[in-house]
Every structure is written in C-alpha cells, then in structure tokens.
Length: 97
Image 1 (tube, rainbow, N blue to C red):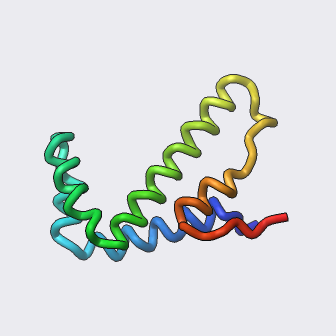
Image 2 (image 1 turned 90 degrees about the vertical axis):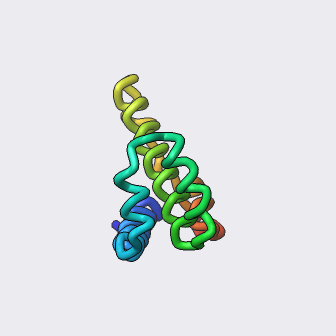
C-alpha cells in the first residue's frame, strides 16, 4: 500500500540523489561540527530542493522517533499513519477520508 509516509520517503530519497551531485551538499553531509553544519544549512536553505529535503528528513525522523517511543511504551496498537505531518512537509493538502 502506497501511503503518504511512503511517498514522503521516496521523494526524500529522490531529492537526496539529486542534491548529492552538488559539492556543497556533499560537504554538508560530511561536516561533523554542528556550528559549521548549521551555517552551511542556512546557506543551502536558499535552494528549494534542499529546503524540501530538509523538511522531509526532519519529518521522517520525527515520525520514526515517535513510533519507536510508542512501541517501547507498549502502545504498538496506537501507532497511526502520520498523514497530516507528511502532508505538511510536502506542503500539500491532505486528501484522505
């Protein structure tokens, strides 16, 4: 089943493949110093593909963390598909019933 979360992951992977062609993006990925990385990120945010990739990456990480916390807390049955969160990251309206 193709869910909004699956589509978000796919779009994120596609954007990352495109961005990896850029030496600036490759340097960003290799940078370990948090202050340098934050500075580079603020410059790269001028690129629409990077801004979308970063938003999707943060959203996906947040969803995975939330699911892991719920699973560890024993609430596996409470994990819902994060449709609205992914839709917000993609900046598209939610089209679900």
